[in-house]
Image (cartoon, rainbow, N blue to C red; front, side, top):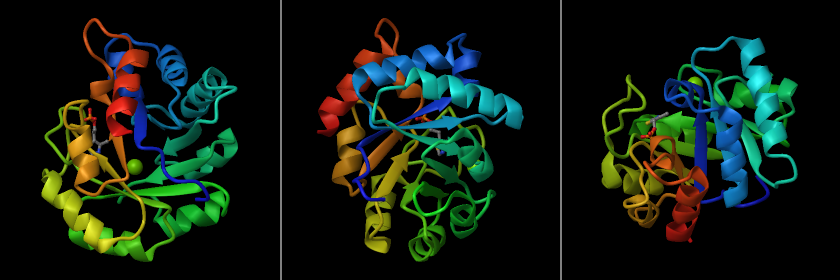
Length: 210
Ligand code: TZP
Ligand code: MG
């Protein structure tokens, strides 16, 4: 990977944002203003042309920042979009096949939900291993069983790769997730809070994760 994984890993989730009438570009601009170093775009419903269109909007919104841009699910589209990496799940290309597509310069992350998956991820050429859901989440409807902080701690014993913890992470519990052994927290819904800007919430996360 070259550089350490930033502690905050915001996910720009198309369905989550558009369902609330929020624009992806505006959301990305606020994350840029907060100074985030890593961002994922996740779109579970759009076709490839739509994903590439929005990926270009996000890239433009983040122009001038050092933020790494990671595309969910699709290694081929990450390359076409000129993004910095891909995040694959258990149903996508394997990390090693994703690596064949994106090359050695781009990052490859993989989602895991069980001990066995973490062990396999450790043996793969993934740059980081995501574990979760750590806490209950309403964002992923087909989420696997919650692993808790104990699951994060267990994953820490199973892999030397950087760990991204996801699922139900908030400003209030983010620190405990890092203390349990994660290197980074991925967040979708907790970036949005009534009466607060996304920039302010992201800054709060960066503060507690420092
Ligand atoms: N994978 C495991 S939980 C989850 C994903 C994509 C959703 C996380 O969303 P939130 O709103 O941060 O709980
Ligand atoms: Mg996937």
